[in-house]
Length: 373
Image (cartoon, rainbow, N blue to C red; front, top):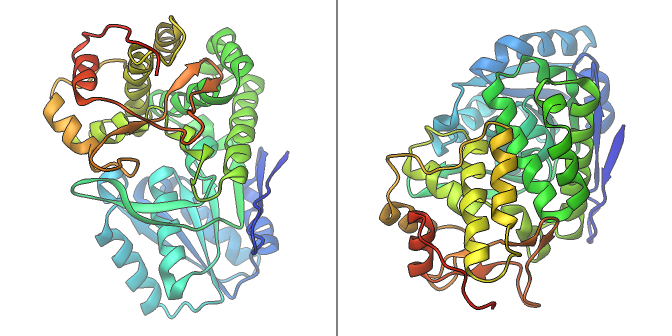
């Protein structure tokens, strides 16, 4: 199955997302067709290197393609400027030129870091995304957002750099721990909330089959989520407008990750963020009554957390949200649902400022529905 991300603009940065089974075994052929190169830098983390990285390099060599594995320690704590610099320096030391291509083989951290390396190495070289987690497959590998975290917040340094190809091999999902699968499903729930009520309904009805990793059910989740993400990105490559809806749950999620020092999985933080931000939408009079409860019920069915970590304080979370990329003039802004399948917009923006007092009440679990904006 092929889904096209058709990007408008003076340069043709459009690309395909391939969804299927056994695709990792075909990587040399697929990557060479999308990105002919003199050498391939396969960037991965210490966990994925053992599962797929070393085999991928061997397959490239069998296909008479020059490839080298560049590995860094697994985990969000490695998504830093130091990791970016180390990888770049190693590639420079290896004398990879502008005719090289980066292959990002791994989850969201690998995709973001490897993409940022590709965006900045010799002022930019091509790259291919090969996501190995559900979250990366249906969300972070699509759209060209690359970057690293810094002490004050998540993803605050980065660049838009579109991949030449995304290869989503459904077979790799079989090796995911249950918590990682659930983390990816948080993004699937988000896609249903922001764009497709029928998809949200299907996630409710098929939760047992999806959780059990039944091939047909999991393939339907990947296909529909990829379609939604691709459509939103194609219409707004640089997040100048509607693409902001993809940030539902993320304003609070990024604050949770930053204050918890990334002890919480990204998808888990997004689930908590959606649970609270949906309540905020109702408190602002934006969302239909019952929207938050329905979102929370589905997240709970996928065994995702709904409550803030015990270590989280309102002061720390609000301070972190104030450096969020969507903040303007010191005001924290949120992408909020109007109903399941439809996001709120006021005609000027897809995000909404929220009074700090109300945000604190929502975080504390004390909210009342206010007058509609």
